[in-house]
Image 1 (tube, rainbow, N blue to C red):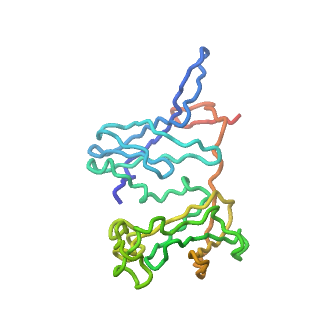
Image 2: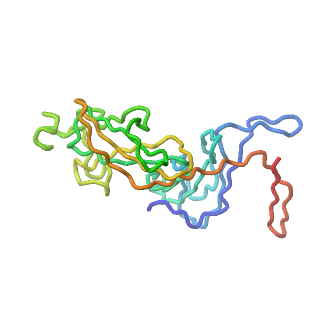
Image 3: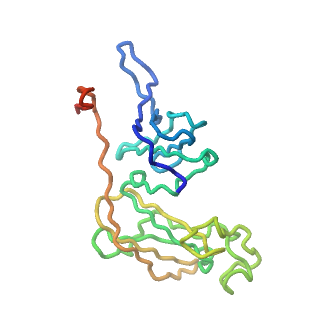
Amino acid sequence: MALISSGIENVRAFELPCGIWADGGYVGSPRTAFVKWRSVWADKFYQIYVNGQYAGATVDSQQRQMIVQIPTSLESPVQIEVFAVEAERADTDFSSEIASSIGQSGRVRISMLRGQSLPIGAIAQIYFDNGTGEIDYDKALNDSPIRIWPACQDKAGFGMSRFGAGDFGYNSAAAVGFGRGGFGRGQFGLDADAFEWISPAMRAGIYKFAVKVTDEAGNESGSSDTGQVTVTPAARPAEQISISSFDKQANQLVLGIS
């Protein structure tokens, strides 16, 4: 993994004021945070990820603070992570390498290989059991069907796919191949492509999911079922917190909740 998490400590995020009243009170700046940290690394650059998404990088190895954009989150906390990287990779987005759960709190990610045998016009529907153990195929969980091949040019053409399953003449003009698709999850070359779907926020529980593919003629595939998936939403963030006291000798902070 290119991201280095060791050696970085005391990561703190502060709300920035966008206006200060005469009595010293202030109005918080929405959707921004001032992030500071300490690090043992002297020759690394740093990247910040917000809810698992790349938010920015430092401009040199001495920088230990940055302002980043954050989402408005009323139901779950915002996760801010700082990583060290080699200088030449500072502008590379490593979001796919982060196993961050808070950014997808209470949600389920389903990945599926997009093989060349799946026809143009086919759609995928997601079903689940609502925690009962029996999957309900009467109503799909996704609001709109997933188009497996948005453009016919993405598919393999005559001679490049299974006979009768490809699209004559296109010859894989834009097909995802080795190094660009679901590497490690599929085959090399044309069948390395993959797509994924993320569920809406769900209640805590144990669920099972299934995927069915339907072609333009209405022919439906059998279901591909998942195992049991445990969903544990993060706790709601604390509000109305203030500092009651701080004992410097004992390094003890007392917070008050109003």
